[in-house]
Amino acid sequence: LHLESDGVHTFPWLHSKAFNARVILGWLADALAKSQNDLLAQWPHESDHGFNDRKQLFSAGIATVTSFAEWQNVTERFPRYLSAEQATDLKKLGIQCCHFFFLSAQIAAGQNQLRWLILPK
Image (cartoon, rainbow, N blue to C red; front, side):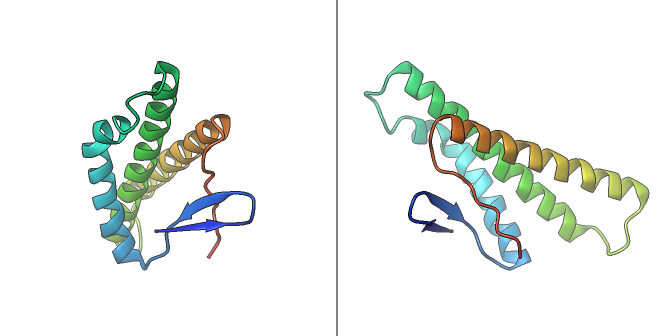
């Protein structure tokens, strides 16, 4: 995981091979979900509004990482040639992942937080 700047904004990005990404994202999703309360408690003097904003963004981010980790896990597990049911399941997971990614980006943009940049391979 890296932080990169384009001179105006700073954004996180992850670069890895398929197997490593599947393992790392699965671990990251689990670790974030387990430590959400600790992450939220890091700013004890903030307003209720600020807390709710962070909680909303963290929850959307955790959902994004979790759904992407699940998509990668299923992609690795399925055979090369998919049955109709497997293709439908994979499509549903991909759409769900894109939905959470889009939701996270909308929330972050609305709060003027870090933006996520998608870099094509």
